Image 1 (spheres, rainbow, N blue to C red):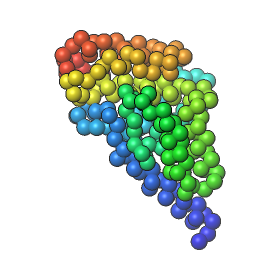
Image 2 (image 1 turned 180 degrees about the vertical axis):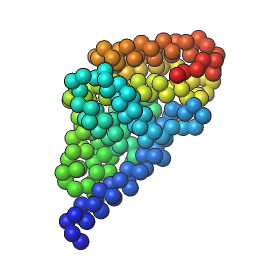
Image 3 (image 1 turned 30 degrees about the vertical axis):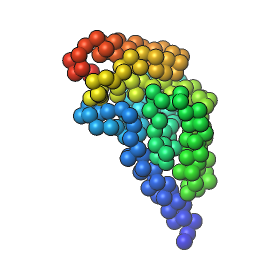
Amino acid sequence: MSDQTSRLTAIIAFLQAAEQLKDTLRSGRTAQGRPESTAEHSWRLCLMIMTFERDLPGYDLARLLKLAVVHDLGEAIHGDTPATEQHLDPHRPERERRDMATLCEPLPADVREQMLDLWDDYAQARSPEACLVKGFDKLETMLQHLAGRNAPDFDYAFNLTYGVTQTDHNPLLRDIRAIVDSETRERIRAPFGAIAIV
């Protein structure tokens, strides 16, 4: 087997393992009421970042998108921890890092190092891009809470305190959050399904 074939085979093995993210379910519900997958969350996070590109001068768009794609990739192995329960699992960051490393094992060294560097950057919020993606990640989750067909006892007030630190450091994120918070307060006041989130 040639070096090129070995490299391609290793990358394909990684991609096939990463496919599990399509079946990794989150606690959030879609507008139709089914559980969303982590892959769907990551896709919409990328879409959010792309749509605000004009409002992000000075940020590396390619790096923003790469961070968004890999930020939850480790969840393909042990699944997602709901936002409301993350504070109950002090070992989650270490487990997710191990899972990410396990998922990346088949990759050629250069690609594996790139993937793990991106994941570590996001997890530790080392770069301005990672800090921004963390804020967008919280906002995407909050928007899904508003868009989803949730149980009647869903705690919409959770949105009002979720991810404040991650969304408070950037003017654009603060502006988006103000809109989401306003819609959250309206959702809390209005009967379920009485308002449409666009």
